[in-house]
Image 1 (cartoon, rainbow, N blue to C red):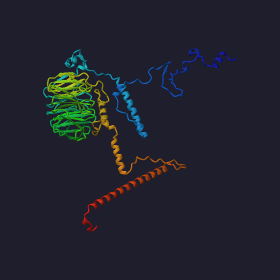
Image 2: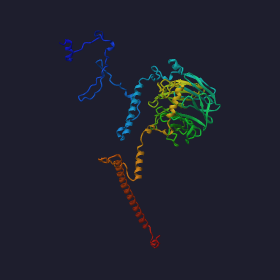
Image 3: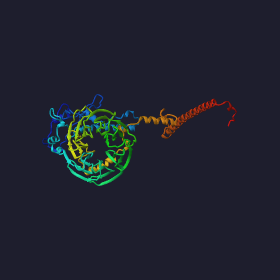
Amino acid sequence: MAKEDDVEASGSHVGKQKALKRYFNTGTNREETPAKKKPVQKVAKNARGKKQSKKIVISGKEDPFVGDAPIPADKLEKFSRGEKNESKKLSKGRLKDIVIKSEENTSLAQKQAARYDLLLPEEAGFLEGDDGEDTCTISQEDIAEAVDITAGSKYFNLTLNQFGPYQLDYTINGRHLILGGRRGHIAAMDWHTKQLLCEINVMETVNDIKWLHTEAMFAVAQKKWLYIYDNQGIELHCLKKFNDVLRMEFLPYHFLLATASATGFLQYLDISVGKEVNAINAKCGRLDVMAQNPQNAIIHLGHPTGTVTLWSPRQKEPLVKMLCHRGGVRSVAVDNTGTYMVTSGLDRKLKVFDVRTFQALKSYVLPAGSSSLSISQRGLLACGSGNTVQVYKSVWETPVNKPYMAHSVKGSVWGVRYCPFEDVLGIGHTNGFSSMLVPGAGEANFDALESNPFHSVKQRQEWEVKALLDKIQPELITLDPSLLGKVDKATLEQRHKDKVERLGYDPLSKEKFIPRKKMKGRSSSGSTQKRKKKVAYDEQRELIQQAVESREKAKKEQMIKEKMTALGQRKALDRFKKSE
């Protein structure tokens, strides 16, 4: 007779709950106890058995935040990479798959960049005064005392009254500064730590000075020729083809050094191979006003006639010629987005132009004009005139009545330039150099893979190799860089038209012949290909024959027409002439 426990075990288990067994009650070891089961993800299904949206259930509760966190639309718009390619119009399967995969990668990169943008550590800000207080009346000493010690140390003055006035330039990452005095004094330093890299005197007039792709080399436009030095002050090259250079601009993604000379020539030097790319005669006289568009690497030149011309290294003529001022142009600057251009002239006017439409947006009158301009990464405009530097905010958006900040120096301002990724404006003047604090001028966060102010020697070498591999050719410098990734449909249509005229028929007008499938091995690949060739040959032969017949017919008609014309011009005595 079976025991009661056995009867209960053999019965139905529905509606019953098994008693919990402990290892100390059953006598089993801890190792023999079964492993705990993982929480099961329950997937809901509809009536047809298809999976619906997943709902993760843990400990009997549903996850309230299913899927990825939503991304703000403005962040996605910020990192947008243009319009998507339409894969539905593509006929080839392999090409279609490549386009679809490329669009997926682009969308993923856009979403990741938008997500990581929320995690950036620094935020940009501006200087705000008290009620009724103008920010332009706040002195640099007050700002340096109010900020922390690190930011306050960025306001300093260098008294160099023996070899001035001074030109200046910062490296791409904003870490190093170089000064060039008019009377030959050159000094390169790490301005964060105030450590001097080199200091030399070339015993010759220095017109301009410019850092190259890294802080290891810099170019100096001296009285006669262009010289290249390393960061220890050792002369590396003397380029006698580049004579009487007045202004220079370096294009970092193309490794091109653009120079403007007193003889009216615009020259390009490829520093990666040390060769001259092109020399263009601007035919506008002395070239002492120069700027570059950071977005498309177009060079902007200002002329004494009041015009501004836009140049590309592969064009002998200017891409655009604009009449900006009634007098000569004194300075030109272009913002980082490549949308706005600001010019100042001898007519004491400051004008803002939209580079997309080449039309003037705003016009301001400055009491003393402006001899030098510079635009920061966040759109602050610095104007130097006399011994005063004024900073304006949003000059192309709303009319500006007063400056955002102002600062006076001991000598006449010779050049102004913003430091990348810092709220600092460098001022070169007749008595040396001044570093001015401008809150909200620089980008708060930097991309360490592109321009890292804190890189090591090894990181700099690796970046240099990658930059050389990714170098953009000079032929790709155009006004609209977005055209480089598009298909020129007009050219394709013209090619098709030329092909039709050359062949005498349109190869795309008729659908391709698809052979019928035959039995008993007569539809092998070889026989199918033979039938295709035969049909194509017959069709082509008929088309060629028709083209030849039409050509001969037109020729005969032309001959008859010429004969009738000749008969109409015959004279009465021509009938007695012997026929040849």
